[in-house]
Structure formats: C-alpha cells, structure tokens
Image (cartoon, rainbow, N blue to C red; front, side, top):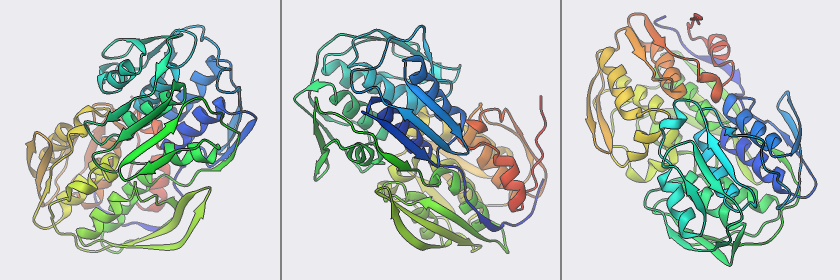
Length: 426
C-alpha cells in the first residue's frame, strides 16, 4: 500500500556470499568450523544440502549458528544423484570450480530460473585448467579425475563468481593459479581462504594462490548482509521523516558501492561503531531521509553494487532529474534480466526509462501504482515493495516466492519498520 516512513533499529539477516563460502571452505577444512550469523535462506541452504549429499556432516542451522565437520581437501564423496542448487547462481558457479578438482563425476542443476542462466563464463577458464565439463547451461556435468593445472586468467568482466570459481579450482591445481580483475569485485573468497589458513596473495589487480595446500577449521562470525540492508537504506532515503539504524552490517570496501552511490545522490548515510569482526569490516549504518538527485553512476562503482542495482533504480525513480547507468552488462544474466525487468516495472508505475545495452536511463518522477511482474527474481520483488513508500496508488507484486532465497521474513521485518505490505498466498 502507498505511503509510510521508516524508523527504528534492526539487524538484517547474515551475508549470503559469506554464508555460501563458510559452508564450502568449512567442508574442505580439517576440523570443525563453527559459524554464527549464518543466513538461513533458501540459497545458502541449497549449498548446505549439496555438501551433505557429498558426505559432509553439518549441524544446524539453528538461530544463525551452524557447525561444519570438515572432511579435508580430498574427503568429499560422490553424490548419489544430481546436486540441486535451487535458485542459487553463487552455489552452482563456485561449486563448479571445487568439483572440477574432485575424483568423482557430479551433475549440477537447479530450478527453472537457474537452468536458464549461462555457465560458459566459468566453464571456459575451467576447461583451460584441464577440467572436463559438459553443458552451457544447467544441468552441467563435471567429470572428475582430471588433473588440473594452474593458469593465469584475465577476467573478461568484473565478476566475483568467476574469480572465485577459478581460485577454488586452483586449490586443486598443479602450480600457481592467478586472476586479473578489470575492476575490484567482492573479495570474500580471498579473505575467507586466509581465515582458513590458506595463503592468498594480491599484487596490484592480480590475485594468486598455490595449489595443493590444506584448509584448517575456523570460527566465523558473519555480519549482516549489505545487499539486504540496501533495501532499507533506500527506503529510509526516499521516505520523508525516516530515521533508521541498521546494525552490524558488513561494510567490506568491495561491497559498499550502494552507500557510495546513494551518497552521491544526496543521501544522508553515516557509519557508526566501525569495527572489524573475523577479518571483515563491520559498522552500524544510520540513514535519514534526504532529497535525492539523479546522477551518472560512476562505472567503477558498478561492480561494488551489482546486486543492489534494482533498489537503486527505485531510488533513481524517486530522485529529481536523470540517473544514467553504464557498465552493468552482468545485470542481464542474474536471476532475471534485471535491467529489462526493472524498466518494465518502473514504466508500469509511470516512470520514464530507456534501456541501454549495458545499463539504463531513469527519469525521476511521480510513482503511480500497478501490477508488477518480478520474473521470480527476489531482488525485483523487494525493490518494488520499497517503491510503495513513494507510490500514490497500490502496487501489486507478483511471483514473490523467491524472496526467501536471500531474505527470509522480509515482509515481517519491513512491516515492523513501517512499510505497508500484505502477502497473499496463491
């Protein structure tokens, strides 16, 4: 329903990227890894299920706590069937790298959305390393027992998933594996590998590691997910009278593009109680309403805010003037074509947009109402829920079943902060 403002103090669920990686590396470590702040969303739980299927004992999760009983680098067992990763693109792309180094065959698949997503950009470097992989889109079959060799790979696009896939395969490769990034991307894989005692080096824009070493169990405290917090950062920024504190948010500099972009638009955002937890920077984020203006989004900020773009498009729709985005081709191959889906939805609400090959132009205006198709994309659904704060009429958002993949109980938390949301079961 239209209107409302955002106020209060809240901690959003744990970081999804780190939750995935804690399971993957904990499973391959020697000893027991204890994790707190784990995201109990469908995507992360799909990763848990996959490793259980490969013989790893995992206790939990319960109240964000989970224990992984590591089997060591060579302790995974052949799964008894396909590994179904649901809607999780992170799971399937990172697992492709890990499984390329195993002795057994495995097949990775997922739901209808995941089966439509391209895998070539991770399979290309894996083939260069010696992996034997079949399938341009899921299901993808990885034939085990193939010796891998370290390579140097120049990423054709800034992608943390591709970088991580290559580095994880490099754990099993002979020699040194290195990756050059065209622009910085989230570095949770490198940080967490170091946390598990694996040496990862970086010189300029090149990350490299030596294959064949071991991982040792670690205790991990996962901060709140900045991608989830972003919905409420925008919500507070666009709704007059709002004053919100988001606690214990991960503010890794490779993830803070959403804060940087909102500040450029005029948002009133401050970081409080800055600290470091388990090698990751954390802060409480205070957001107060401020009028936003349209900007040209700096290209170097795009990889640092790629997952937050849908809700940033809502901020742009509520800003005065024009916002222009370039360099965001990766948005075309997320859970949906997020550029096309957001443009379609904003147009339905009366906002003028122009779709570009690598981005979008959004003219700020007055939001009306209407019915929005999300294409089963959780971030599209939550972005348009936030848009309701500034809409003049009711917004009906279809196909919200995937919101739980990244943000369980989003609707309840949003209502508690001031959004007027009703969920109707089909």
